[in-house]
Image 1 (cartoon, rainbow, N blue to C red):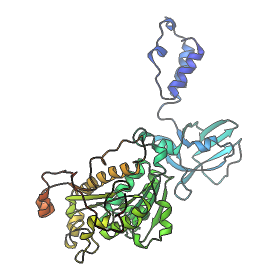
Image 2 (cartoon, helix red, strand yellow; image 1 turned 90 degrees about the vertical axis):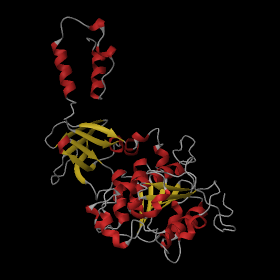
Image 3 (cartoon, rainbow, N blue to C red; image 1 turned 135 degrees about the vertical axis):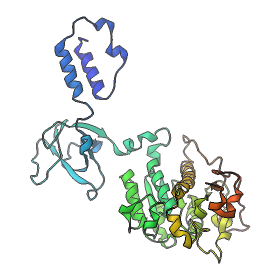
Length: 423
């Protein structure tokens, strides 16, 4: 390997984490009995510069590409892995961990920077406060963040999607997290509840969020997955949110999701928000002790009944607002809070709902392959267990655990003003 150009190519390949091909490493015509020790030492020196334990700074492309930029860098320091993460996500949440200079501009004395990035024209250097060289790894937030979703969901299209969520409890928080991980770029969260101790064993948020409004806690969890997501919160019941504040978030690229602890909110969201604006709608909830759950959906073009036609009879004088024994009766609350497996059962129902949601918000994408919507009907029951000791007599309607129905249908009420003439 006496050709310096070939050697340089190999070094670049190794520094980028590539091994090259066998023909690059071993070419019979380049093999000789004697090894150039100077060349070998130089190769080892260059290769070990990029060992795993060296300092690495992950910096967004907009900073690296902007010749005008100078100023504070906000992000996270991970001393145990000798890495720095610059995050473009609002100054109030992340710490100042460095400063970027242009051509040696003066660094303020009062900041103890972890790293200093210096631009010399088109060349950039990065060093620690102890002047040790730091390797720069560029990333572009949205592309890199959802790069593992390529081929599953088109990231650029998903960032335009909006989820209007009624309820940020056990089901709602789970669905919100999964949609954020799937690349949904906009969220509207509506809930009046505060996170209490008994919620923690079933909710996506924990002790750090006790006493906070659930919408605020879930918003922060979404932003922790995608710092550039747009998240709007309303600490009101959905019926009291001004319509003109909701309309910009409704339409073909949006979906309304009812996960509140009452049927009235889902009925209103479907019949007053989704159907008049041709926005798809999904509602999901769990039954007693989450032994089973239900999902109902409406979407334009399928001639489906509205919520009132489908499930309106369940909103009556005896149970005017609540789901049927949502997680159990009031006197069971304490025991249910610590019942093993309740969160898993809730999440199983929520997973099926999330798959359906992803199908609905991508239904106009010709490159998207539906997962479940061609199998599930507009009303689906999901069984966690058919054990009567957990679910009571109603558990007996299922023939086996993990049963998912695909044959339940509704009829429209004659003369329904909401869905009667809707396709």
